[in-house]
Image 1 (cartoon, rainbow, N blue to C red):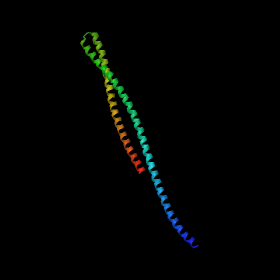
Image 2 (cartoon, rainbow, N blue to C red):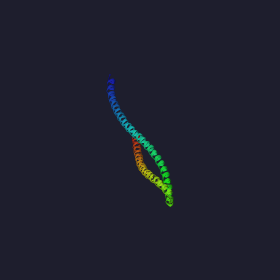
Image 3 (tube, rainbow, N blue to C red):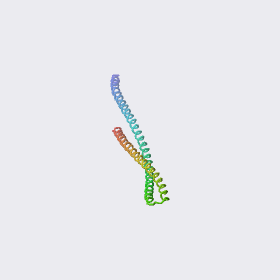
Image 4 (cartoon, rainbow, N blue to C red):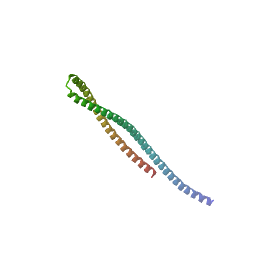
Length: 165
């Protein structure tokens, strides 16, 4: 019985050491799991931010393309109006040379068309300037979004680096 008694005193010591190691391992595992969950939550947040930035970028690019398309259309309209304006101006110069009464009436009619066209040209020029300004603003916004995207990508890379290291 003496042998059995000694074994029983050795076993609790071994069990005690094992339980201490087991407890330490469990706490270490819990700590690592907690840290993993935090990193995973942080990664999900960054991924969501990137998705949002990508959506905003896509929307902005679509809007910019529409504005650019409108600008090109307005440029074409402006070119047509400028051509008409030059033609009208040439006609008005020619009509100044003619002195009879019928020619003077035609000149007055042309002058009215000239003023209408000039008003339209002024209006299209104003719209053109507004569209130019709008494009500049959209490009600035696009630049800011690209800058944000780069920052978020850096944050994501840092988060991934921290997660895997």
